[in-house]
Each structure stands twice: as C-alpha cells, then as structure tokens.
Length: 233
Ligand code: NAD
Image 1 (cartoon, rainbow, N blue to C red):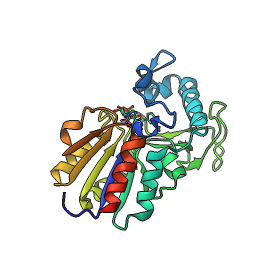
Image 2: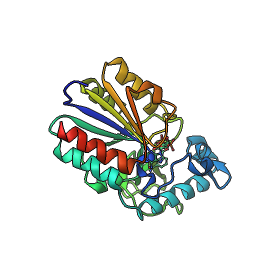
Image 3: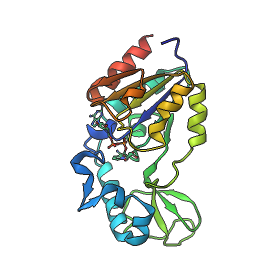
C-alpha cells in the first residue's frame, strides 16, 4: 500500500453487534415470523403500516438504550486525528458513530432518530414512537414514516459517496455482509479506481474475495488495532 491520504470507510450492522444491536441476519433474520426484508419495504408499509411502525418503534427505542463500543470509539479517534480526507459511510441507522464522537459520518440508509413527513418532505429529529400517527412538527399532517431507506428504495447521498471514493487511496469495509447493494458494490468501484481495499469482519463475507486484504475477528478488537496501525504510519 502506498501513502494513504484519503480514506473511505463503509460500516454495517456488524460494527454495532457488540453494542447489543442485532444484525438483520442474526436470529435467522426473522421478526415475529416475518422476514426482515418483508418488514423493511415500501410495499410492507403500504400493506400493513402498523406492523412496520411497530417494528421501527421497537428498534428506535432499543438503540437509545445501547452504547458505542470500542470499534465506534476507535473510528471517532481516527476522525479526530486524521489530517487527510475521511468519510465514514454507514449503512447503520443507529447513532452510535456520532455518539462515540465521530463527525465525518454519512448515513446512506437514513437514521432511526429521524422521522420523514411524506406530505411536506421535511425530516425531523424523532425519539418517540410513530405508531399513534403523531402530527408532523412542521405541517401537522399525520404522515410521518421512519427516515430509513427500505429495501427497494434508493440510498441517500450516493453522489457524495462516489465523489469521496474517487479521491480515496484506501477503502475499508467493517462489519458488513456484502449482501445489500449498492453498498456491497463499493468495493468493486474501489477496485476499478485502483484503490487499496481492506475488509474487517467477524467471518469471511460474500464480498471477501474482492478485497486485497481481509481480516477476521470481532470489530471491537480489529478496528482499534487497525486504527492504531494507520495512525502510526
Ligand atoms: P448484515 O446483518 O447483513 O451483516 C452483518 C455482518 O457483520 C456479517 O457479515 C457478520 O459476520 C458481521 N458481524 C457480526 N458481528 C460482528 C462483530 N462483532 N464484528 C465484526 N463483524 C461482525 O448487515 P449489513 O451488511 O449492514 O446489511 C444489512 C442491512 O440492515 C443494512 O442496511 C444495515 O444497515 C441494516 N441494519 C442496521 C442495523 C443498525 O443500524 N445497527 C442493524 C441491523 C441491520
């Protein structure tokens, strides 16, 4: 690997697993007999909004009880100390990167702690439940939904992600299964651009073969170790 100036990091559910937040694929990927993929779609919301709102209300409440783990703190330290370009692109809808102190974070799949009003298109900070159909704080319409990108919807800010990748010398993927696109395709975009690629994941993932280097182990151990290495260079 040559000199590294600009880094793009992609994180997935695996980085929050040791904080006690289930990955979708743990526990068989089922929620109350529903495949998670069937709860997290616009079709599911149209068919059975109560089910979908209940699912997200539960998860929104749960993440507020959880704390960042050493992997989130290590990335926050990297963010504070890294003088070059850095973008932490997260697929996670929890707020643990931010709570650990990271600032250069992009939520490509939205955020649990925001509600999106489909009438006035404004996104508001939100901590409570949505099941009772509370009014939008801006336009009062009772049309709030979780500000989470569902399967079949287009992730946020892809232009910014590709722009950061074009400037990057290193792409690092942490705790993601390589199953959800377009996030899973970023390693191939990085390879096409000639960028060094590193994977840190509990086990080999569907995308492992695309990386120049793949390290296996828990994020709470691998991430602090890698951050120490890169800051020492
Ligand atoms: P995923 O559930 O498909 O995969 C998680 C990956 O993390 C797996 O490859 C697993 O081996 C690995 N992993 C599990 N524990 C780990 C640990 N302790 N250390 C390192 N790696 C570990 O998750 P995904 O790839 O992020 O894709 C699923 C989609 O669901 C994404 O959109 C994701 O953001 C969303 N999701 C988000 C959250 C959250 O916000 N915390 C939780 C569940 C799912």
